[in-house]
Image 1: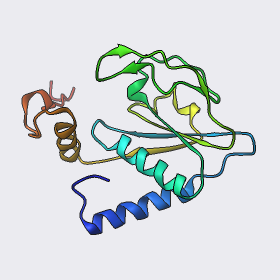
Image 2 (image 1 turned 120 degrees about the vertical axis):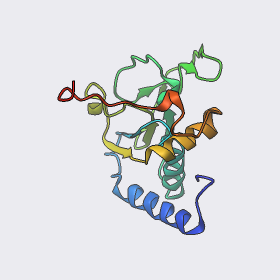
Image 3 (image 1 turned 135 degrees about the horizontal axis):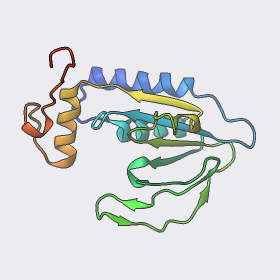
Image 4 (image 1 turned 60 degrees about the horizontal axis):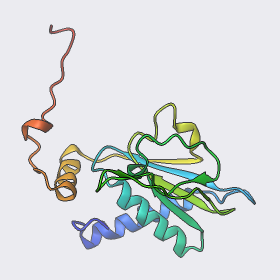
Length: 166
């Protein structure tokens, strides 16, 4: 869980994970479900997906985890075939993992940014979008990536232009 969670926050997080796990239906016999966990950079998609997978496994559900971070430019088709990764984000090198089949009646949880795009959204049987405040996102990215947690840091400053004022 997020290292900054208090005991009360941790119990709220556990309740949220239980509620989401309760909402995920069992796959049809012989089938599998594809679950999307989406959100802005630093929303906590990977951590949430890992925690959700843990909760589902504790309930006896079979779960496969993958992350879009490992699939830059992936063009795999839908269905039960998948690769765990094709790109190593740390080394920026391709990975030649073999094609795998999601076991029957299991749940594949994929986290990543842009999973709700029009060209991808039809691939998911169940979908989760994590919404967090910008300050939370920036702080998490600073810890993860070693950057600045200052939301006023110049590369993060966003300017909105309005056509009515131009």
